[in-house]
Every structure is written in structure tokens, then in C-alpha cells.
Length: 243
Image (cartoon, rainbow, N blue to C red):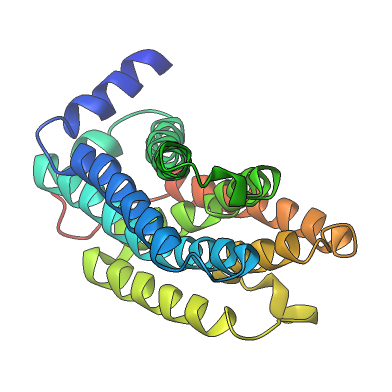
């Protein structure tokens, strides 16, 4: 099966599930909440309001990723107990496409969130309070930082099941709440689920260039993490009871 065929297969699997609803309704509802927040707190400094919505987005996404990835893997298990996946030669390619579909849907939802938000504030004629370049830069960075989270939860869901992945998603979100109130330094900045929050803070404080070397290292770690995930899948034998 070619790449397009595999992508089509992944999309068909989730056709009659909550996959589409999650990726459409959650961003729209989130954007509406952000718009209401901007209206109700009109007297609050624009910087603080933008920082608030970016930090909230960075906090919620790990939990949403854990839910989406876990449900997708659970669907794979219920359909065939992983037998089809395990029987495919070079199955890491299939897993890579699964990761790409999940990640692509998540990033589309992320940008949908901010697009609806921008359309809303434009309609209300308060878009002059939004620093668009800063918002776009923050969203792009969060999109990249979430790649390692998708790969991690794909591994956790296949290896340990839905429960561990969801638990870790909650833990990640709680950690993000903690990191929203403190500034990580040194080795602490390399904690994977802190990357989005660190990126938001660096963008808001205009210090990306100061931490440029660290972000290059994080980019290398992200690519390495994805490659390790694919390597594990290429040698994965599945759960003992998949037969």
C-alpha cells in the first residue's frame, strides 16, 4: 500500500469516531472562550491577555494529545488486536504515517483555534489589541514542540495502553501549569512537556535569540525522539495476547 493509500486508510478508521468532533469543536469552543475573555477583560493589558491564552493553550494540548492518540490506538487494537499492523513489512512506515495524520490533525486544530479567535476579535473590532506577529510565532513554535508529545503518547499507548497515556497526559498538563509560573533554566528547559511553555515565554519576552542554542538542541532531540519511536515500532512484537 502506498503513502496516499495508507493515509486514506487512517482517515477511514476514524470516520465514525469522535476524532473529527474533537479536532473541530474543541478549537472553536476554545476560540470563543478566548474572545469572551478579551471582551470581559478589556481593561487588562494586551500583553497579559495574549500571554494568558497562549499559556492556557500550551497547558491543555498535552492532555488533548493523550486523549486523541489513546483513542486512535485503542481503535487499532479493537479492530484487529494489532495483527494487521504487525503483519505489514516495514511497519515503521505505517506508524510514521499514523503519527503524521495525528500530528497534522492536531496542528490544524491549533491553527483553527487561533484563526477563529482572530476572526472573532476582528468582527468585534478589537483586533488592534492583538500582536499578530507574536501570536503567529508562538503558535508555530507550539506546533513544533508538540511533535515529541505525539510520538511519546503513540509509544505509551501501544506499549502500555490507554490508561498510562491518559495519566501521563494529565501529569504533563499539571506540569505545564507549574511551569507557567516559574522560569526554567539550564537542564530544566529540556523537559519535553515544558517546551511549549518555554517557547511562549521566550516569544513574549523577546528572548528567542538568547536561547537559540538550546532551541537547536531541542529540535535535534525532537527529531531523535521521533526516530527512536519508529525504531521501537520496527522491532515491536505487540502485546503478548494480541494473537
